[in-house]
Amino acid sequence: MKAAQISQYGQPDVLKINEVDRPAPGEGEVLVLVEASSVNGHDVIVRSGGLKMVSGRKFPLGTGLDFAGTVVATCPSVEAYRAGDQVWGTVHPRGRHVTGAAAEYVTVPADRIALVPAGISLSDAASLVVAGTTALIALRDSTHLESRERVLVRGAAGGVGTAAVQLAHAMGAHVTALARDRYAPALRDLGADRVLGYEATPEETGSFDVILDTAGSELECYRRRLAKNGRMVTVGLSASALAAIALSTVHGCRRIRTFSANPDSALLEDLAGYVASGAVRPVVSSVFPLADIAAAQEAFGRGGILGKLVIDVAA
Image (tube, rainbow, N blue to C red; front, side, top):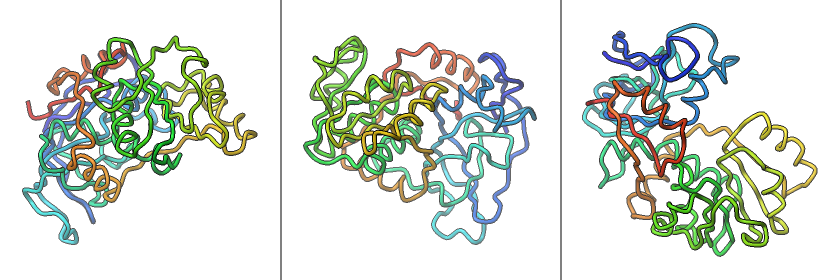
């Protein structure tokens, strides 16, 4: 089977499409024929060597976290799924295989997948897995966003941002989106009540009960825009972000929070409910064939993307 792999740490051209053995499902696992994956920040950080303390120096390495596809086979102990089911999910970033989700087949534990919500394609489903579950954890589980609260989504045009705008709107919050001006119409269509540019001053933005940051920079500056008992969470981790998170613990409930997203079946089912109801819909900027995954990651690195970049593995 074909799989995208990292031949060494570096620029996008270190990504190669290789022929590898098709995996077989182990205990508690299912084998999935992958239709699509997507590009996430984690993929780019690993490829460039930013997580080499975790990913190691044994090559090749797989790439890709999320996928949507069709179940081909299951371990005998797995009863929740059967061949032919369309599923979405994630591979573990430190899994036992040399392929990530950007491969023709993946084996995954049954508790890391769920049925794809009705009404969307597998390609669209792949765009929502990591972005949607990350936004859901941030707003519902980490900051406990409540109806009528004021929420600021920083980096609202990205994958997590577009999902967060929709989820916050569905939760009944007043949503302010921070993004490039050209994306204002699209973000309003997704449910943003206000769209502001990055140059907006504190006086222009006002204060917020919840701030969701996807950039990982200038965190203390944005933390000061929290109202009393406000909560802030960042999913854009960097060395400066980690320092700001540590220093913010002195501020009690107004500290900066973060989390390690590890979506399971229950979380994917919750996200599927929002998708099935029409509250959350995919936002896909471009679709690249697997052979062009290097170009996809290069485009991701340049930024300025509305929504997600999807990898069509079946193309």
